Image (tube, rainbow, N blue to C red):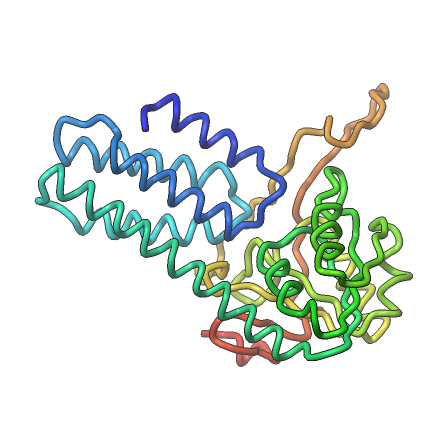
Length: 293
């Protein structure tokens, strides 16, 4: 993968609004794997430096998504341990490590989904916000268990439409609503279930903007609010400020008005106190004490 191919791949990752953080993290690893396999380098030291630069760029392109940071940091740490290898051996080691991390990420998602499906059970009416590959897998496993779904549009690019179309394929009865209706719709739900882009050290959730509002409405209505994501999405270092990505304001299709600043912040933070349950590949956490490592 030459520099131009890498920059194109990174631009696509930066612009992607249709895939969740875990899926994008695996795509980043695939990009690094292809870079390791065929990027031009005269020796192993030159290759290692090139791969580290590309790794840093990929981490920086989606700062609100912890699995990208966590999985790529683990890949880089392994790369650092490979000093003294020949160029050919370093290429093979870097590719194998990326492939292993992709496999582990996928397995963690499937184990998380299994725990979620068991916890949800049959016949539930579930409200959710945004598009999550993990939640897609949960709904697919629930399609024969008489569940119903309430899906927000997830503006401004309406990725909720894609989720609703998949649920329609699986014949899951679904209501599609605007985010403005969440406060009304949550009262008729058995639970609110969301994925995550990042979990902070205290269990607080970084997810698509609007998640915090859904959690507040769920708390007011006495509806459980669950977070379902694998542990690769957890940040364990305390004290680091979370960057919430802000996208191009033109996505809002708002009029250009004098003296008006148009904002398109894509993520918000839901405090841990509003979360009833955390689900990951290791099991179910009902209290912060359980959740803490």
